[in-house]
Length: 238
Length: 110
Image 1 (cartoon, chains in turn purple, brown):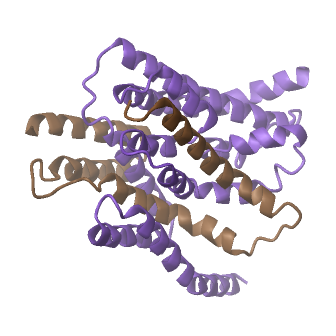
Image 2 (cartoon, helix red, strand yellow; image 1 turned 90 degrees about the horizontal axis):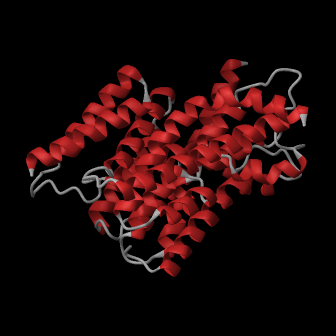
Image 3 (cartoon, chains in turn green, blue; image 1 turned 45 degrees about the vertical axis):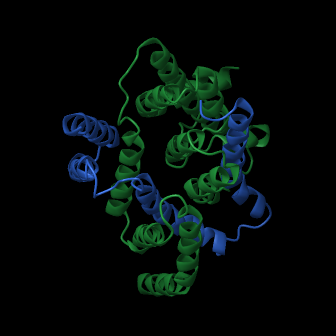
């Protein structure tokens, strides 16, 4: 028990910034869901078992238009494709986590990843339990924030027109952030260009799947150049 | 609610399946090996950047530059978000201010 308390105490301070973020984004999500007629119960269910902010925001579009589960699945796969990278980065660290492993992987959202991959807990703290509590705390902040938003939305009537722009803002911010830290802008440009071209050709209601296919095709074709460049770069370092 | 409860529940399941797949896949594929030089690894490295580019376009898909409000609130808000984020690098500040500007412009222009 003492071991867990120590791990909890070590984990908590690192999650405070996530609390601020999730309180804000989660509340906005809950209010939006409420404004579309989905009560706090649905919001709580989405946030508890999906636990993927961007995908949940995008899914609001699927909850307010024609029922199309395949689109919802494909969009989720694309939006969360970045988690493949998180998983690959955490292969070693999650290797010997025993019965905590399924939950650690389930809860590996962006914010949790940024903490568990970079923070090394003090020596007397069990790292597995430390990572567990980081995951659990972040998970509960997300549920808390969105439930709070759902409740607020049902008690106070907001004029929420335009609040859904929070999703656009989130992606623009992510895009700018990635642009600043990444030297190779090709993947980002490929993403924008392929989507714009497909939007023009196929129109706003049919461009999702063509865009995904085009992006995957162009990325696959440019893989060879990418690998060659990488090898060249590695040679230079040596 | 546009969808029925059953349809909504199916959407929840789709989101869960999609998310769980992307999170568990690396651990299933690389269960025994530490192979890092694969197609999946390449996708994991480049797809996040392309996906966000796509998502920005996706969010703006319904903007019509020919009818009111001519895409002005979106354009102004995105310019402000980009500038603010380059300057301060505070995600919540950029999102909050950007959304605020958009909501105000929408009300002023309509």
